[in-house]
Image (cartoon, rainbow, N blue to C red; front, side, top):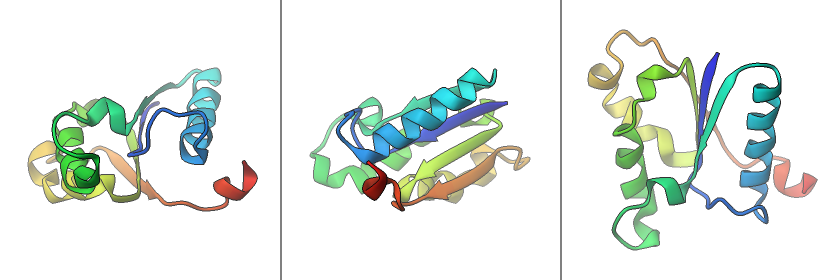
Length: 108
């Protein structure tokens, strides 16, 4: 299975979101799956960080998301994909999920 995790937080081991998602990626890879992790820094081009909720989702949509079997969006990142899904994934082949902050900040 090919899975993409897309988070808007930085690739910083000090953040609970990055550490938690990183562990999920490692666990999937250990089981023989292809798992990738895109962070806000991977998607950021131009513009101030405070505009990330508007700029990062379209940047994510420019990626080849249809090559994945599942995409896990963190927080607001999925809205642009779902708005443009008729063009980006017309057969609705890609399974999508959205995750929000949960117990991981307390866990770490």
